[in-house]
Figure (tube, rainbow, N blue to C red):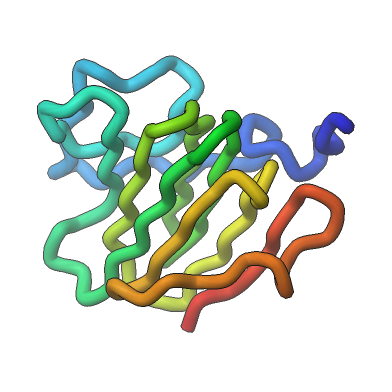
Amino acid sequence: MPVPAAVQPSALPVSPPAASVAPAASVAPEASGTPVATGTPGRYVYGAASAAHVTHFTAEGDASWVDVSAGGQHFAKLLQPGERMTVHAEPPLGVVIGNAAHVRMSYDGKPVGLQSHTTGKVARLTLK
């Protein structure tokens, strides 16, 4: 079932990235925001490493999209199975995940269950 265009990451406004963030050579064209170079294909890191909070997303078994809004910035990525996205940001974080059953998420090292936040295939939650 396709996700309505109104909630797909490509349809959302994107804030300009911070000037101190360098693009990674392994970033696919569908990425929003500018990730920090990781040197590892399939690993995408967004935001300032100095942020006190870290959120990890890993796609497992099927492609999924992850969309995070925090502090006036917006980070979005279509993750293929096995790919990982990390966001360093201060709360609150608005999170929308498409095909949520195939995403494992953690916030500050603690697993985040997505089932109670999921309607259909899309999870929506706010991390504080």
